[in-house]
Image (cartoon, rainbow, N blue to C red; front, side):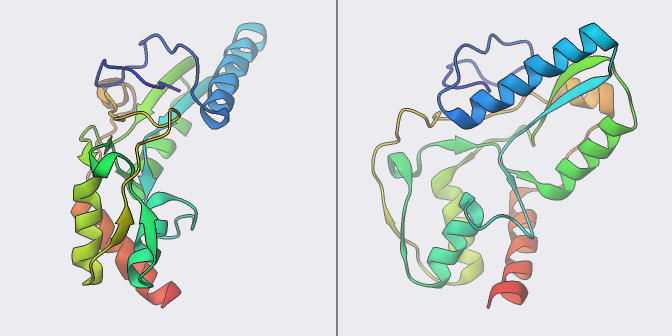
Length: 187
């Protein structure tokens, strides 16, 4: 929902502007509907803003799975802006703990970031995958399309305060868990 912004990290009270693509537009629409239901019916509604979730059982169309699959099978993939973009990769287990904490704490109406709070340069993320797989990636490096922000970076102080959220999984460890799952499930 944050779009392209120079202000980092992304805080829940930042102005949102206009979404850059349909997917974030739907996320913003859900938050607006949640606010309306809270206002009309006093429904407790907590919108959790996930940041670049990865881990075992990830969707094949998402970047970590797609890149790993391409490296394993010697296929070429696109890495925008020569890998200089940054993403706040957040392990699925950390996200799950945040979701459970939110479900157990009715807060009225809130929007809360769930991320790691530590953006990783995409070229470094790919290098970690190469190291795990033991093969070099084949990639093209076109410019990023306008719908891709140069960085995602969650300010997780509100999640820490309201949910006692504390991500525990460094990206190296999370990717190792993903790779273990991938080898057993896909190879």
